[in-house]
Image (cartoon, rainbow, N blue to C red; front, side, top):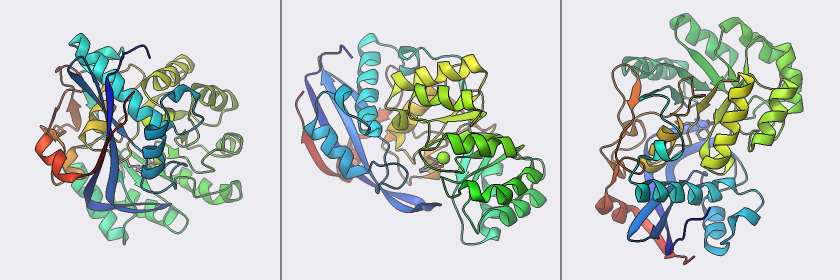
Length: 355
Ligand code: OSB
Ligand code: MG
């Protein structure tokens, strides 16, 4: 990245979620998010580190990302820690876009669509009734696809109930690595519910077992955690480990690698969609830009700010149309204004880390 940077400012913000979010690996009630501001020539570019508060989705967490970004300047030499590196990379891309006076989507070579189709990811609930109510709410808001989180004990029976109540909706399930190949027969029961896909059923770093499972399932497998690079995407597609890829900026280390994965998938005829990591408005805006690349043909997990935050750090907040899409903005950079006053009020630490 040849952009000359004057300084980098790290901030950690705390944002309480409107509703707790539960996956097979745990429950989140408050986010601890690192924002990266890169400054040059009187302009600022902004990035968001998308890791969780604990190393449960992948190996990174808020504090590891802070140390990586504070202590290592040459991110190309770092192995792993893609989300920390990706937060910085996204900030540089945003800065480049602002310097060129173009929207971020144009800077990264996107622009295939003016509206992003949106789905929602619904966490594990305390009861099936609550889940059905949550689905009702999201469908009424216009969302085009429902993803529900599953884990052993909250899977086949629950999806059966959802399908009885909503026979025609676009439905999928995300296991976040909660199963093993020994569960293949159990997972095969999901074939009865004509799901769009099952996301990351097996090991977070596995490709080979997913290929074996896919051979036993009619339901397409979508990989999330396992795809950290274009090389992984090539291997997974070659082995038949997935028919769909959930692409997340942070997980793959930024726009450059995301683009490479997108291109591999597009060439192979494998659809991609943009995943989410409970981002603030800044990360959300980057996801919107990414979703304008041509291969993003399925509704993503990028949804309205109000599903997560009572108040977002960007204005206007990210909003979804009655038809369940986000209209892409044309302002330079990531396209939204930062609410500096609110940002300052939720910042718990800030450090300039030079260059
Ligand atoms: O696996 O896609 C995932 C949230 C946190 C960690 C992992 C995942 C998720 C989601 C939520 O599914 C996506 C979102 O609404 O931002
Ligand atoms: Mg997932």
